[in-house]
Length: 347
Ligand SMILES: NC(=O)c1ccc[n+]([C@@H]2O[C@H](COP(=O)([O-])OP(=O)(O)OC[C@H]3O[C@@H](n4cnc5c(N)ncnc54)[C@H](OP(=O)(O)O)[C@@H]3O)[C@@H](O)[C@H]2O)c1
Image (cartoon, rainbow, N blue to C red):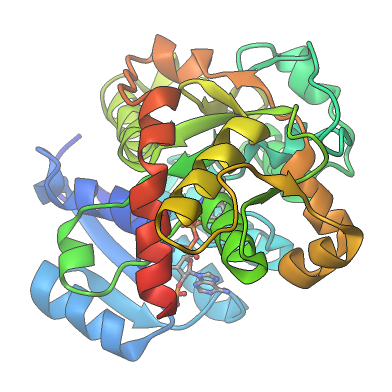
């Protein structure tokens, strides 16, 4: 590809995940070929992105559908890292990319972020499962119910890919863990906290002891923030060098996984850290009551999310050369520092 052939639209650039990917794009050996525009909600963060990092910015949100469509129409690659569940936004991106394909004849690329919550069962903390999803097993993923988490958006993306006006690459991280360390963090414009683990820590702080759903028996996959950000770059590099080698659409699911943990193992580490820091009554987690599920997670049903199985193997990314290095043991060893970060942030 020659210079300036890659206009990139970046959504979610100030996020935990998106910021970590953008930071990698900015030091990519082929950065001179990228012309990055970020859609950013905060004018203050946009100003820093522009002045300090040279990223073009447009102020707006995913709700600005016309803006999203127009920006997509000017892009060869869209990184979608803001919201896995915004169907209206993804349809606006489709409209734009359809125009792009019509005006250039070249098929644009959509690198979208989903999540392994679509593999969840309803174990409620009580049992594990032998069902392990493999992202190279197309039939297994196609058999997921359309009602699964994120699936409405993912199915719409599959259809768009099948229509042929874009090629889609669906990166599906499991539990992402770890503190990002990027120049965007240093500049104070990147979110530094993930989702699941901080949720459980905040619940533990609230009840004065680590909690878990049921007996914490089910298993989830996990992946470190730096490793999963690298996965996006591995996919991008393959697209830049040998696009035909990269599965897309129904064959374009890329799990982010490098090991598994039980909820008990995770919640035990949280409980231990809270106890050691004088914020928990016992180093052992106890089961959340129904009232606590509602209080700390918003609803009983969402609370049960933290007692599901979501087991998977990331074989498709590894086949492209992805080599995650941080393990489940590293994740468990990182929990005390994560608890300290959450306490520091919450004052
Ligand atoms: N973290 C995980 O463990 C994990 C695992 C699997 C999947 N995912 C999914 O990956 C996506 C990103 O996760 P994350 O952890 O990086 O979240 P995050 O830290 O909250 O980042 C979200 C990013 O998107 C932007 N954003 C959110 N809603 C937007 C909207 N309506 N319009 C414009 N920008 C918007 C945020 O901008 P502001 O700076 O303005 O807030 C921020 O830059 C989410 O959909 C999440 O469900 C996350």
